[in-house]
Length: 114
Image 1 (cartoon, rainbow, N blue to C red):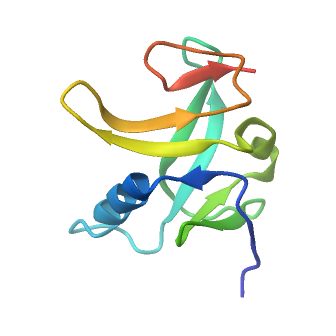
Image 2 (tube, rainbow, N blue to C red):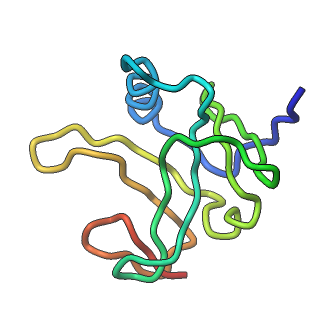
């Protein structure tokens, strides 16, 4: 049994609803888990990772708003306190990230600097 650690970040209700919708799509691989993380790149230095993936040995399992996700513990320094939202409006559609650790973000909202 996997130990679930207290979540370093939060999802809005709209984000949880959209993630669950994606997981209910035909052909979704139920062996994958939601992965949150960062990677180098993007116009501000780091980009967010939000997708489905297999759990790796170093990953920790978290739960937030009844949603289970995995994250490499080394990424928590960049993501602790972050809120993930889902925007579904005419001018903006997609996931948005409100990260208190970001010293600057790019216009597209998917990359940041610390």
